[in-house]
Length: 269
Image 1 (tube, rainbow, N blue to C red):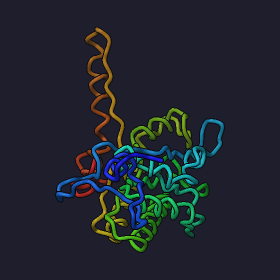
Image 2: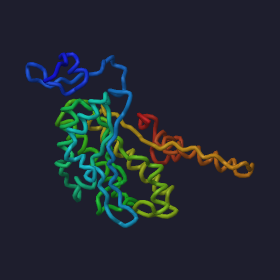
Image 3: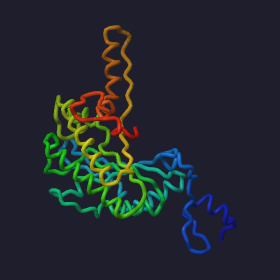
Image 4: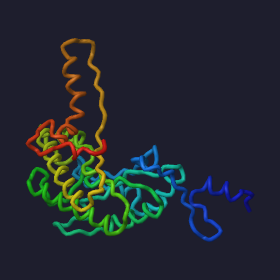
């Protein structure tokens, strides 16, 4: 027995059922100027890299978000969070260029049912086992996967897609060059960063060719290094701080213009 009025029930429980049996989904005001549906953005850990023990991780499965996605999105909505980041897990759905979206489809459907706007990570530190990340085939295969992902998103719904093409290019290049993450490419951080930029640009072209409305989000970590009180190390600290913007400059074409970057590629940072 509850003494809550219907108004109170709806305010405190966004999954409240109305007298006609329909689930009530309170929506934010839509004034046509909002980039995201809520100020706060939730997130579900979706790393799928190979660790130093050479074990493939799948954090989406580890926290059972793939099983309880609907409940998880409902919890976000209950806290007033209507935007979230989540992962598609490329390594699971691409088998030699043949696609099986069954691991993603229930999550995509659940996010739509709960009214949560999701920024989908297409590559979050993981890719199919048969691919060499430094090869030209990596860029081509990634672009084709981006196309297939966007087609699936378009063919199963009508909302504007939000994709994070490659998660944290700067951090991943740094971690891989220090043998923290596969491919354990010591000293090849610059080479890896440029390869990931090539893939991101090719993927962006494929995404927008399928759905020109698509928004591209580039998550990059912020850093701030402080030098000790010695004048001879001030400049290296400044250089390190400036390096955090290199990925954006490459996407814009201001740095490494031979990669093909241009202003339209840098959408949301």
